[in-house]
Structures are given as structure tokens and as C-alpha cells.
Amino acid sequence: MSRAYYLDYLRGLMALSIMLYHYSSWAGYTPGPESLLGKLGVYGVEVFYILSGASLALVYFSRERLEKFSVVDFCLKRIFRIIPLFWVCLTTMLFLKLVESKITSQPLDISVTEIFLNYTMLFSFFSPADYILIGGWSIGNEVVFYVLFPILFLGLKKFGLRSIFALFSISFGVGLLFSYKIVTIDATMLDNWRDYVNPVNHILYFLSGILIALSIKPLDTNENKGVNFIVLVLVIIGFAFWLYPVKADINLIHGLDRLCLTILILVFVSLFFKLAYFKISYLHGPLSMLGELCYGIYLIHPIVGFSIAFLTERLLGWSVVYAYFISVPITIILAYIVHRFIEIEFINLGKIVSSRLVGSRLKSVNK
Image 1 (cartoon, rainbow, N blue to C red):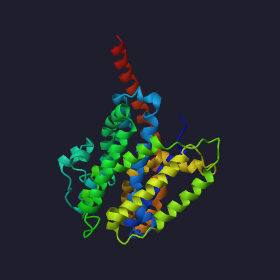
Image 2 (cartoon, one colour):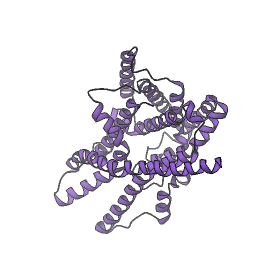
Image 3 (cartoon, rainbow, N blue to C red):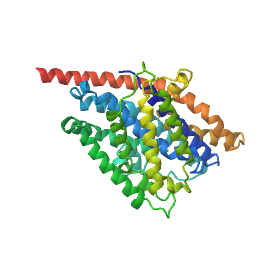
């Protein structure tokens, strides 16, 4: 199977956007909800979910893989992909919080139960808002979706595409329930955050990605017919998303505004999917690198930013603006290092462990 380069590009751009949104906000220049960065600070995560569903469907829902799917293989590869770097960042964050509490003489307001739930990823099932890592809630949601994925696979195998569409329809209705009833317009986004981060509120994006991959055929890279038109529509949809009027932060996750913005990103990702196997020759290197580093950028940027801001302010008297400015290249460099020496190593280890376990199980079945 060819590499879906355009999905890598989009994944990397979303990670970069979320990092820039956070750094701008922590530096005192919070992007407004009417701005492109302000919208991507929220919907960049939703795009991650769509891309996750689409990528998994591309890999596992092909005709030849439908007969060979192994729950053990899938789970092991997901564990080795997600957990090692998550644990490294979680341990680092806890250490930094402990150091900060000693320096500032403030108590460490994290319970043993919270630590246990975060290391086991169980917080995403029992208390999604009790995450320790900034952005950890979205990784917890991904874990929930991964647990559901084998069930989706079995549903597709037995009932066909209508099973995914039925679940998507239900999840869309649940999303509307959250948007119009559970998330309240007369409160702030922060006040609604515990409800908003619930994985039930986001599974529609993951299922959307699966539907996109199963119902849209990417263009053949040997035929450029229609590419220019798709790029033109992408630009139009992108500007529509950017210029869509949003009055306040809460409107990004509530009511008609959320519905319209959701439709725009679904159309946008669907068009990107049509170009999945194409390359942007003059930007392929940096964009593909961002795609590879997206998980590291997403997880480590709060650790890098807060650490540099804390140290430069205390030791050099720097403004936080300068601290977060230099945090951008440092985050990308560190993301490359952790990708090379942690992510890739554990991904390869996961493949080895999976092949041995699944292979041994097949041998025992065939005896």
C-alpha cells in the first residue's frame, strides 16, 4: 500500500497549529475564536480523530486484511505506538510538577488515584477530564476509540458499511446532544470542559474518518485530472472555515457554530483524502517530517514550553514571549529525537512482539 502523504501533511500541520495556539495563549496573546489559529486550537484535535479513523480503515479494512485481522496484533501495535512516549512525557511532567511544588512551596495537587488512572489510561474510560498531561485527554479518547475499533471491524465484516454508517448516525445525534444540551452557552468553554472532553462527544469524528476511507477513492497519482479543481475547492473550504464568524470561545463547541465548523472540516479532510497518495514535491520533506513528528510535538510541547518559560524567567529575566518563541524550534528538535530513539524503536519492538505472539498462536491453532 502506498503512503498517504497528504494525510501525513495534514496531521503535521494540525500538530504545529495546536502548538502555536498553546504557545500564543500562554505568552498572553490568546488567538480569538474568530481567527484561524483560534479555531484550529479546538478543531485541530478533531481533525486528528478523523485522520486516525481514516488511516486505520486504510490499513485494516482492505479486502485482503478483512480475513486476516487479529485483535492481538492490532492491540499490541497500538500499545507500543501510543504508550511508551505517553509514559515518558507523563513521568517528566510529574517530575517537573514535583520540582515546581518544592521551589514554590505549593502542594502537589495530584492524587495517587489520578496517577494510576493516567499511567493505565483508564482515566479516559472513568474520568476523562482527570488527565495530567496537557492534551492528554485527546490521547485518552484515542485509546477509547482503539478499544472500540475491533468491534467496528467485526460489524463491518458481518453487516457491511451500513453498520459503520448506523453507528456514525447515532454518534452524530449524540454530538448534537452535547452541542445543544450538555454544553451550555451561558457558561465559558472552561466551565464546560469536563463535559466537552468526554470521548462520547468526539467519536463521531473518528467514525467519520472510517466512513471517508471506505466511501471515497483517492485519485490515482498517474492521473492529474481533477486535481486542480480539488485544490481550488480546498482553498475555498479553508477560507470558509477561517472566515466563519464565531463570537466567543464557547460558540466553537456549541450549537449551530459547532455543526457548521464540523461540516467544513469533514469536507476539507474528505478532499484531502482524494489527494492522499500525491506529493507536494517542493514541500514534501518538511511536511512529511512534521507528519512523522506530530505525536511527539503534540505531547512534549507543553513540557518544553513551560520548562523554558520557567527557567528563562527565573534565571535570565526573559519575557514569556521570547521563551515561547524559542520553544517552537526546540520542541521540533526534541520531537525528532524522541521519534528517532523512542517512537521508532518501540514501534519496531511492537511489530516483533506481535509477529511472535500472533505467529505462535497461528501455529498452535493449525496443530
